[in-house]
Length: 529
Image (cartoon, rainbow, N blue to C red; front, top):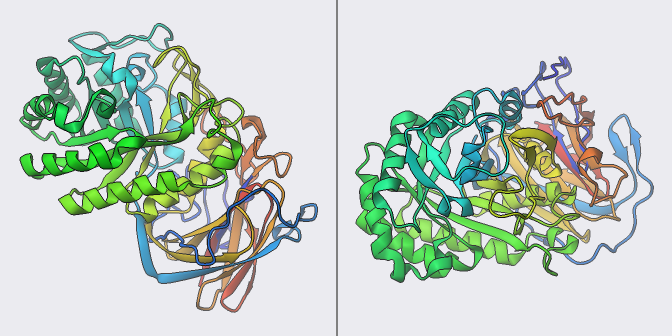
């Protein structure tokens, strides 16, 4: 990765499509270092999710169009819709940990030689995000079965993807987790009904890399096969065998969007009562809509729909009621069915992902796993929504959604604090994190036509601020492809190299910072007080 030294204590990054305001970024930010000085793109400290008073605006892409965006010493310039963002650093509304971001994979992925300790490109892309959590399972978990002792898959390899899981494949995954510092949710087959095989696989995993395993997930989206009452007895046979394995914990039920109340909630009641202390994460899935339907559209990705936030709230309620340590959206993305070309693989997915992550955190969630796959996994339909595009086990493209994940991790870790937005601007949101002794404010503008002139009020005197931007080319292009997306003025290579530019210094006055956020962009601003 490229390394550069930045001696200034205050700087801004220019990012396509998103702006991050920040002050007092530490000097010497280099390869994999965050503006806060932490490695792997994560800062330390506290952070908070914004709330909206005056509301996060919705509606069409209308409104007063901004003037042509220019670039000055402080970054982009223009005349946009006024917005005031009031940050309340004393009110924590969520928590963001180092593994909040993550990736979900089809189970066959561990048998194509991709997730291994010698895949330096994938490892570098992980480390740029910090220590993202891995989840292996999804639909292919029900096509896969445990074959026991066997060699590791050759690398790289492609179709047809092996469905017989071997000790060698598990060993490779463990090596990948050790190399990245990540932990994994590991899925085993449920629908074949072979308790002996699935528990033997879980036992081998727990013996191979116990410190890297968050928990064992039994099956995938079991609500597609019947109600929880219909499946409880069979599920408990698997759970009995798995919790008997030293150190093994459970994650589940990994239901579809439609089953948060009807399946996940009663599942949580049953499992916590029968296996006290063994259900470590309540897991849920969600997508905006199905691919190639009217719901999978640009307008639906310009907002975080109440369908999604309602799911988050339901899972949080079940987690709280039953005293579960936490919950996680462990398979998610834009549109189910592998995404939709021209929507899921465009710049808008990056801006959508930013708000999706903050909404989960705001509602008590512990993280997100964005789903990935290769053509030939889970059927024959190509994958369009993956953050990291692979072919035959080799990284071939860093997709737009990855840039949204990168901006999010650059904002830092810790408590999210309350943020109130007052504006008539459509598709504009703001979020804040107390990170590494400073405040990170993320300003997200999903309007294709209108810039936003933002005044951020921190409630007490501001000494300095700087920002980086997430952008597309040309400006305002929500459907730009991967090659036209930048964060801090630079693209991320398949080798994980991000030769980012220095941030832009922002204008401060009293308690406030002034930031212009162009159409279809986001800004990450770090503020020093």
